[in-house]
Amino acid sequence: MRVMTKQKREVPRLAAGELELLQMLWRAGGVTILEAQHALGLPIGYTTVQTRLNRLVKKGVAVKSKERPAKYSASLSPVDVQRSDLDLLVQRVSNGQVAPLVAHLVNRDSFSREEIDELKRLVANAEKRFKDARKKSE
Amino acid sequence: MRVMTKQKREVPRLAAGELELLQMLWRAGGVTILEAQHALGLPIGYTTVQTRLNRLVKKGVAVKSKERPAKYSASLSPVDVQRSDLDLLVQRVSNGQVAPLVAHLVNRDSFSREEIDELKRLVANAEKRFKDARKKSE
DNA sequence: TGTGTACTATGACTATGGTCGTAATAATCC
DNA sequence: GGATTATTACGACCATAGTCATAGTACACA
Image (cartoon, rainbow over all chains, first blue to last red; front, top):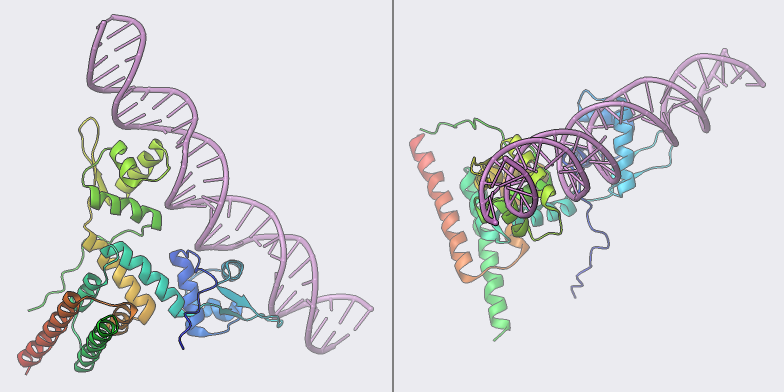
């Protein structure tokens, strides 16, 4: 059975730059401050990275290990942020309507054979869910 | 031939609250400060709305008319913001890959018959473009 | 065990966005 | 024209994010 495990914590609002740090953590895994600084590849100082990482920790979106050169890692999966980003975006650009947003994305650029097949599969699944739901409710 | 018409102006980074104002302008059209305040429906003061609107103007994403009760309107279409939001999001959540994002959206919730048809149409168009491009390049 | 290095904590400065108060200016009307 | 009202300009305050310098602490090892 499918228990909709309610998210205990809301994803806090993250400014663009904070997201950037978080992305780095997703890519690089558990990193020390020094490694983080290099992974970012930006001309910003060591203590700047330190402060920003600590602020992420204080916000609860990253964790810091106890070891001596402490390792920082994201305590939030990309999916979590994706979800809230998407919620926001869907609300923002098409007033809660998902289809127009998908239209935008699909018309936006071109796809490979494989991607097109993938899209077809997705739509077929959506259709199946639609029919199933319809059947169940009759 | 497909000329990638370069966007002349970058959409400036807009904080969440600024977007909210902009959305209001899209919905309500050219509005006075008072109308904007009402349209927002939030418990924020008149001069707050004034300041925020003026900041949008200074950023170039809104314009202010010369009439005496000045009318503010967005100088940026939703599409512009959608595009840059989407660029950002696509980059953010799936590293530039559009298909996974579409997958997220499509799996995210359920659709009506009409929406499903619309999605099918979109995918068919994408496929047609794919074939045309293929034919042209042979 | 003392000292130099690696790491961390702390505080400070700046910019920006959200909030407003108040002063200045323009329009209205007696 | 002068008083009243509507509109605008201006500046201020606070919170937060980005930036860093510097002071403090722990570790290694001579």
